[in-house]
Amino acid sequence: MSDFIISGGTIVDPVDGYFGPGAVKVVNGKIAEVIKSKNSPKGDIDATGLLVCPGLVDMHVHFREPGFEYKETIESGARAAAAGGFTSVACMPNTDPPLDNQEAIKFVIDKARKAVVNVYPIGTLTKGQKGQELAEIGDMIDAGAVAFSDDGAGIQNGTIMRRAMEYCKMLDVIPISHCEYADLADNGVINEGYASTKLGLGGISRVAEDLMIAREIMLAEYTGAPVHLAHVSTAGGVELIKNAKKKKLPVTAETCPHYFTLHDELLKGYSTNMKVNPPLRTRKDRTAIRRGIAAGLFDCIVTDHAPHAYDEKQLEFDYAPPGMIGLETSVGLVSTELIAKNRITWLDAIKMMSLNQARILNIPAGTLDTGAAADITLIDPKIQWTVTEDAFHSLSKNSPYIGKELTGRVARTIVAGKTVYELG
Ligand code: DOR
Image (cartoon, rainbow, N blue to C red):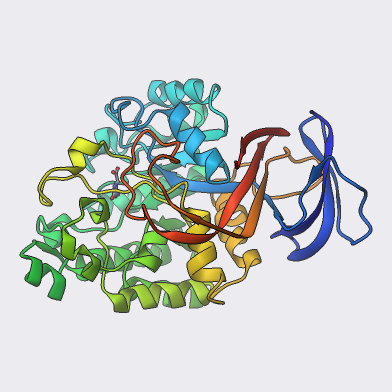
């Protein structure tokens, strides 16, 4: 079916803020028309009871190719993305070897051709992701990299980060900062506080994150160069972002479902699926993150989908790698914890999960505009379901949400007019 009409659903258009009845007409894999009224034609795809949204975008996923194909490949990650409603994703460069040169970027682009969703590579900011020397950013842009980041570790040297930001500004791409000072993180494995003391685990202070967030904001103010703050987890971070936004600095920020749903006291069972970096913080931080989202301080909700193999996560807490998968639970968690609890609306959510990310990356996504690729996500906002390990499309199953009951799930994902996922 290459030409079709989706009707009967509720159109969610973050571009003009429309949330109401209508239909989407797709011709030749492109959006031919969006009818925003009750009197829309009968469709080929009946979306009664469903939300009809621009395809979701996730600018922060870890597909482990090259180097760790047993955890996730670009192909398997793309299938997980489709099942989570994402039609475009950008994958982080902390692979082995890291994506720090033109050939590596070309490798991902080549693999991405066979993926069921659009996969964009992010290149490293520094050579070998070592934080010491800028990578060939211009070359990587020519090969198709859409953003740059040393995600997985913070850039410790302020001058390197400053140069990276200035260089990215000149080339009109966004640098993404993983905010953590290694010396202050002090080899910790969970948030420093009551829980770390009680469990006898090494703590990572919030200062390790907040100080680097403050540095990036100051550098943005000083140089005028934009920066995007990855996976913000602290109350202090929210406050710093609030001040930066008040000053209208070129700073954008993301947080993840785990920071608005979980907290460090839940680590009492030493579940390594809850080991993540930055670490789960306290209930107070979680509240601040929720309030920050509700106040519109976060531009994006990303998953930080970080697959790890079962036996790697079966190690003692200190030795297990940080990260959790997130692509297939994100919509359900946003729906259950943010929308059903009246913290934000669906329009807010879809803006943070599509349009804003497409704009930051400067990729063609996040809209239902006429002529745009027909990347469309249908969401059933009412359906109740339980997260099960078997249902994951990801090669890895390291989710702390297995067994959790959620309300709201992706019903169908369409990429360039082709259905790449359908529930049931
Ligand atoms: O928990 C995390 N896992 N945080 C990161 O920044 C990196 C990621 C990974 O690559 O596993």
